[in-house]
Length: 422
Ligand SMILES: Cc1ncc(COP(=O)(O)O)c(C=O)c1O
Image (tube, rainbow, N blue to C red; front, side, top):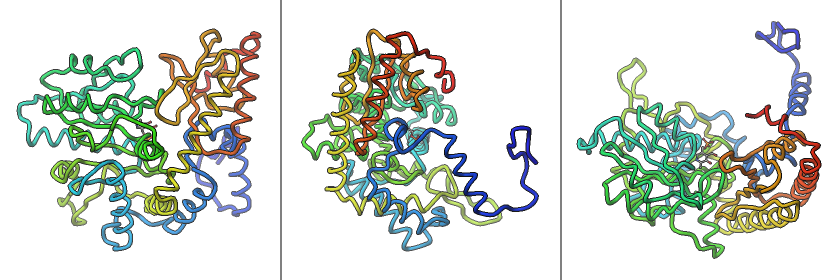
């Protein structure tokens, strides 16, 4: 059955040919924003380059239908998974005692870390009264709100300093007897800035709290920036008070979605990750999953393993160098237009704003020109994210932004198109 706009409203009575279906899918794709040029820098596609993408795709297809829920029962899959986790642990400063789990994304990694913290407190910290609090800088990712909601924890967002990084004194002032977790981002989404993780972790240690570094964006990027000689404050298990880390392979690890990792400083802490997930009181025997989800694609894990092996440390360093070059060209090009200025940061994000143009109209102009208006509202920025893309992607963006800047200055553009997205 179809409605007046020819949308399907129930299962078709009879099947259709692949040719017909393929044509219709192409039609749907054409209705969407263009991923190859307009979205490459504006929605976190994270393809790496064409060679990486091809390896990722081929490995994904080899395990297309395989359910990683059962990976532990297959020696091959178990090995792929444990090698990915081993590589993750070493990259993020973990020693032999550190442990990790695969998840389907930053949201699940963060949920699992907050869940482990809660179970750890219930088992070992009768002195902390529930509901437990998660105290974090205002800039920490929205998905932590979801974890707090599902886990019946309270979320306390604390204003950041004038440099938009966590204000550690303000975090300390926000602590209460119920505070259980402190969070810092490396880097935060939106501004691409590293919070002072060593100071947040020291505060956590001083108060006996769980400290989580949200490295979803930085986990597979910052280590390679450091290998390029860029000096960064440490953000991972090299910092003694860091208890857990979330790091997304499907972002700058250039793996296929959905794939992320959650890391624990040691096995004792990881044990709380497993609390409640081994179920035996039903008719089908023991049910034990790696995280929140049950069935999950082995294809994404195999693709991550393949990309990590294909690139190796050298390949990641090279992709990072090329992405940083794109970032530099974008910054130079953006700052050459009107009076746009970029916010310096330690990531591939390129937040830019104008002091004189109405940024809502700039965002509206981006929407009208086929872009997704990725940005922040307080303070207001638009933030592409650099990738090792072809010149045409950078040139198209800069040329379109030039026209948009002029259009706003001349009074020809409004913010109306933005309503589609906010
Ligand atoms: C810093 C940070 N944490 C967590 C997340 C959530 O990740 P996901 O979308 O993979 O669930 C994101 C997503 O962009 C992020 O930037």
